[in-house]
Image 1 (tube, rainbow, N blue to C red):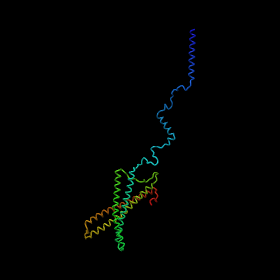
Image 2: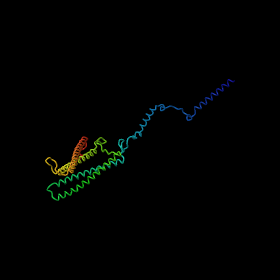
Image 3: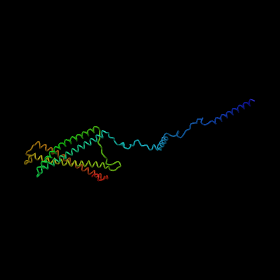
Image 4: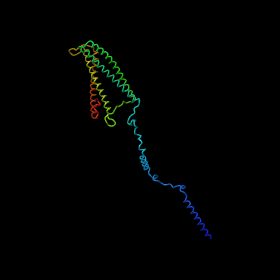
Length: 292
């Protein structure tokens, strides 16, 4: 009898256990927590992950459309270009104006001196009427006064330009280099050739004018030296005249002769440079009409 009771108890317990197991299996999935699982991203090496991320960024159209921060925006200077300050830009403009004024006054003074020489030659010509001689003498006096004023103004203008240049040196300023021979697209820069042509033509004209001016001075000083000597003896020595004045005339003539030689050298140099520029422009394909 006791054995039968043990068997019935064992069977009842087994039935209850099976029933509990079946009930647990029928519970909804939302109430249970999933076990963690490894993915391919979890086991991918760091370098491979970075490469994949880079490819994903490159594939995005918005990333491809962004501009490189190293590239300058339109209208901004390139990295190689040096931005000039407002003060330096103003200084460059002032130096240019000062040099132009000094050159204009110097040219006006040279032309006034050449005019005086021409008037003196007119007075020395025989057969002229009294009225003509009086008018020429009056103009000669006015030209002499104007020459004195122009020489003084030219010296002041030259000093002003020199002071401006010296001030720029103390500030570390530099003058503009001007246009380049070649444009950005590789073609010849016509603005460069036009600027150089104007510069060299002006230099040539100035040199030619000064050659004539100093040649006139040498001739005039030779005449003054001859007139001051009062004639020569059989040994070729002077027989009279102011010796102190004669020494000064000799010194002035030597200085004028040196200036004449410098002007002739400047004329040759300017002409050579101008010819070289024209040949360079011809080889570069610059239209010949640019220099007319």
